[in-house]
Image 1 (cartoon, one colour):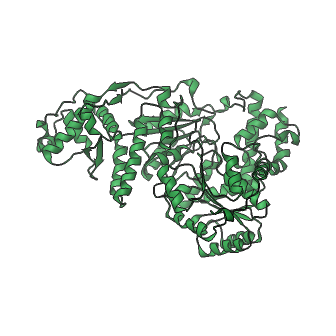
Image 2: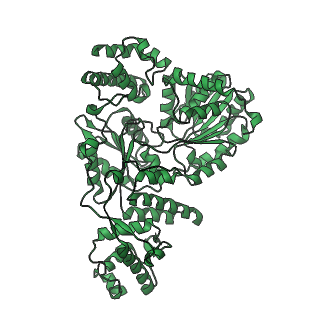
Image 3: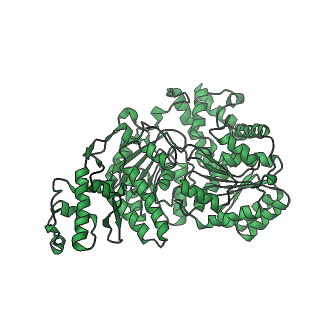
Length: 638
């Protein structure tokens, strides 16, 4: 954006107005992190690229400037959003806060859509949410042209901006057409927002959306309330069930969670298994009827303690704040996807778990999908590098968080709250075994002129006589039987480590053959060591005192002190009242009030409306709408 197109108000005045909106509309007294700088920059007409972790308050970075600019007579803010459910919940939350907002998507009848369009043209809306496909239609662009001609188009916000990048984990081609916003409405500020983007993806966002003159704001990617746990996959469903029962089930039921699986069939099987185990689990994948998917998503958002078992088709834009765990039964494609999905846990800042079971077959499957894709070789190479980075995270014996943040270019110290920090793995020198495995791969290819898969290589190392072994004469190799003292599980663990270190590559789909890579040379020459985890019979448990549960018995106030019995009873009564209001308004309960707001009310026990002033999350409209009812509920607990 050029400087002469920006209508800049004094920074001090912008900040004052923004703080006023933050308090009056949203009920918060102060911005967090870089929010103040972002809202004043965008409110002043500047373009911005905002990278902020899930739960960091991205929405306020465009909602506050939109309200400030609309009050200054600058018109409508248009928010590009990829999902109908997200639009519905965000518009519902804004209306609850007293903001004139609407959405245009396929869920509306033509009559309702026309009503929204008329509101839009009459200047009756502050924010309008629309999908990228709709925004770039001639009809919608004509509406925007009309607003622009009258100086009533104030802001474009492009949410989930990583969708524009081919390097991102959720590329959506329709996002590419959003470059029209810069070309057609050059004087209107744009803010692109995402929770997940490495350097390559960021550069692609800037190029594709023509944000070269935009200011970039990067928050810390750290989510300190999330505990990362990655375990070797053995019997994954049994491991999952033990994890949920040990860490997310208490006397008041089990926590809300999301479980990601690679295939639709796996989703159905795991959901059924959890239901048989007495848990409230629902499946979600693209193969289900649309009405069923919507019903399951609504139950997840509106009921407590629901576990959603899903493919990655589920999750983007899910604002549910009290998801206590996200579990992966299969390895994702890359760290961006993993971070985005695990970031759906603990949006309320309370303790949460990110748990994943992974194995060699996960790596093989992901590599096969890359190899079989029709993409160009350059693109495939990038995807392999991203997969290798995730495998490196999984195989790490040091702090998970340090590695995760390093991927996004952020330096940090050991967190003390991941599995490796809490239970440092016992390591042993596996250099000699690594050289045996690498030598075996080399000898096999040298003898046969072709490569073989992991199972056959391990059979050679362990001296296992098979028909295939005899057929190829591999029982005559010098490496036959030299690893008989190791189990197949140990060899597979070592192979994963060597793949993570780029000493071995898996390719030639569909046979998934093993090949030596550049990293093998220094290991074979004895120039470096390979350390391997000592495999335990079972994963280390979590001490009872350190469990991540946020059950009724352990609910604490803002000072970290446990609620009294009376305060807990008041909190439960407030939640029951909130559930009724949410049902009446057809909205998730957290849209009415977040749990943190209810805890503050239960702790304060307000006696009059003025006592609600300063309670975080209660803006002017909500105090007027619900204050009297809140006081009625609380009056029973004085």
